[in-house]
Length: 290
Image (cartoon, rainbow, N blue to C red; front, side):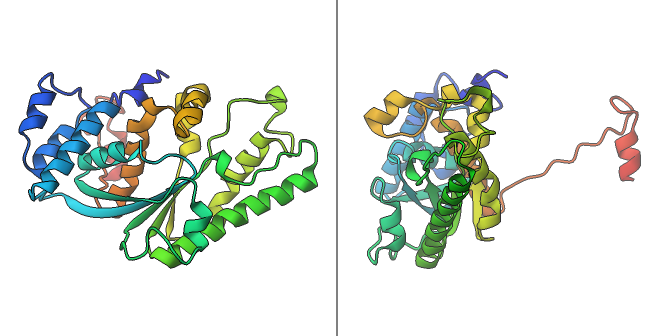
């Protein structure tokens, strides 16, 4: 599958060549939403975000957008993702306000008496942890130690989530984990207990059973697999900016997050297509439905 499907959001129409002029003249919430309905890259989403901030600073109404406040706590740099999240939320009719915690302060936010989120009245809290932010301790071939470490990581994660729910009252969006590219044991990597790939695979599989009903799972493992792990990870960008994935995938990452936000606000849609004129399936679907 062509990675550009995800990188360029190819199911959306391309923006007009007059995007810059239209954006400059936009003055209402519905005009910003119309612009967000196109396949915008990271730079265009950033410009949309700045335009939105400018209108808000001028006291302009963003009606009919639905306001929603989201917190982010992460072991990576979330500042690069905020413009993409806010710009993408417009596509779903959402006026998104983002409250960020400090870099790599997950445990502090969860357990300290002082928190960035105190009194912020968050609707949603995104817990964005990658494999570097969990206490994984590989022990290839040692199944007993691997099982202990796996349970420790699950308990650590769920304790953080429960504490954040208690502290903020917000609904949690919790990322699962994209495994790293590097392997030591080739095709046997995921089968050998104690390898990092084994720990992450089992962590993701068991995570669903550990979380509460007030938590959504954001399937980063699936998204990274779709675009390819070697494409998803960018070690240089991690070392320079502490962004846990390639910057070119910020638009699709933001789209995945905002789909959950839209579902929370009741904005998800279903489309039932029936073949009633014998063109594809001989009318079987229509006959069975009737």
